[in-house]
Amino acid sequence: MTRLWLRKAPLVLASKSQARRALLAGAGVPFEIIAAEIDERAVEAPLRAAGASAEAVAAHLAEAKALAVAKSQPDRLVLGADQVLALGNEIFTKPKDLAAAQAQLAKLSGRTHALHSALCVARGEKVLFETVATARLTCRVLSADFIARYLSAAGPAVLGSVGAYQLEGLGVHLFGKIEGDHATILGLPLLPLLAFLRQEGSLAG
Image 1 (spheres, rainbow, N blue to C red):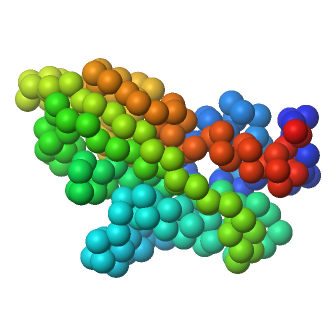
Image 2 (image 1 turned 180 degrees about the horizontal axis):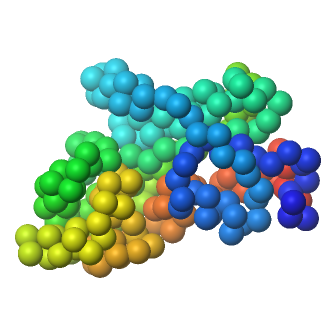
């Protein structure tokens, strides 16, 4: 355990995201992965049908993941997180295949989209902390040839991201301007999380 972490048990991360794992590890927060087994599309469907904002959808999904795992780990701090991409009023989910990724990138070309990254910390059936942070990213004008080359180079890994890109990898070539915290773009508002963990007594202050 890192000397900054004051609890005997590590944080439980209700996510399989490699980027979130890397962020927590880099910050010296020990964690155990117990991925939430929920149907994300089914959870968000009534919210989207009711016209909920992208921020609200992200927050609801993060809470659902945290609570799903926390019920089976009642004495542990559980972190759920989710990220939603919005282009205007249109909400994007992870593309189902490379053809869908190609169509999505064509829509994002030359335009600014928002990444809403939400987190929720729960214990048992109680939500202890939640927040949503937003980053705004502007894509360059992307030719069909470039999109095809990018997808060929990046491969199926793009299907693991709501934007069909990993900014920490080849996805950086898509952008002309980025506004927002790097951790938020990767899917975890890290600074608010660390502030809560210090306040809560899990991290040294």
